[in-house]
Length: 288
Image: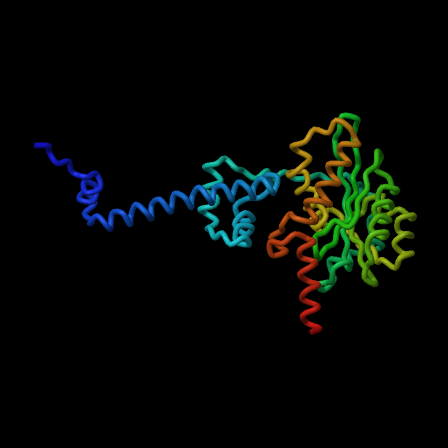
């Protein structure tokens, strides 16, 4: 006579002190949690890859929530650590290239710092200059950014850091965008921004000029934060063989990624373009 063997399920059910149906229910929940963990890790990796390795757990949680996938920040951070997904951001400080020693005194007011916020888009502009190393030498890069939306409105690159660099960046903005009346343009007191030619250009278009205080780089944090972000997300990890390659990559980063899809915490986890659309929708709703 064959010996009857105890079913494995009954053995584990007895050890766990549950009945067979309860044990099967527990197995089902366990299998569901495992599947969900695999799914969430895949989604986290997707969002991390889509962000080009720039998002940390906070931004990824927000992006997952938009798609209907709920996960806590600590759990997301834990999964990212397991998968060795680490944002490229760190705490490097960028050094200003411009020299303001010849621009001191009451002739250079900090208008933007005294403005009552919130101001509307295209009302407050900020600008700064950085350099990009390539295999053919340095490129100097001037960017002009909107204070409210965080959108880069225009930029220009040149082999030399002259007044023409900032003038061409400003002309690019004027060609593409309609600025608000009495718009404010804020920068540091570098000679490029305090040149007679550039100040005359702004005056010609009715743009008020504002300057950071001497020795207070935080006054222009809006512009400096952009360069800090771009260096962490692109420049520090890319070797540009040529200046043409640098121009192409930076253009793509700004106008295809940063302005369009890269979310910002201060904008409610929207990109600059998405935030502008939300403001436009709010205005239409208010009128209706």
